[in-house]
Amino acid sequence: MKVVIRYFFRTLRLILTPFMLISERLTRPTAMTREANAQAQVDQQCQQLALYQFKSCPFCIKVRKQIHRLALPIELRDAQHNSEHRQTLAQEGGKVKVPCLRIQHDDGHTQWLYESDQINAWLEQRFA
Image: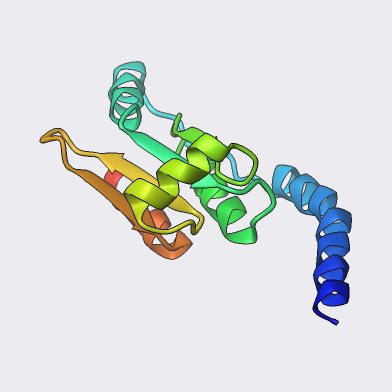
């Protein structure tokens, strides 16, 4: 019975994934604009950030929309299909849970921020 349920949800995911990704593109908010030097400063700060995500996760889509709205060039790391990123997330972050924002602070400390609402609030506070 567990096998049937597992295959049912895998099939459902395969069917819904394209629709979710199309919906993400169609409902993407407009990106904010900054002056060139302000955007360059934001670009430099974003080099210390990486978002571990699954492509079709609804919570990851929510965070990607926020990233696009704030015009942030944050590196997206696929923890679903890339075993290296998945292993890094498990070993350094402590658990394989997405979305997860990796924040490398200037003092060398690495912060792993989970939960889409917390990530969006942190991005809003830092870059809005």
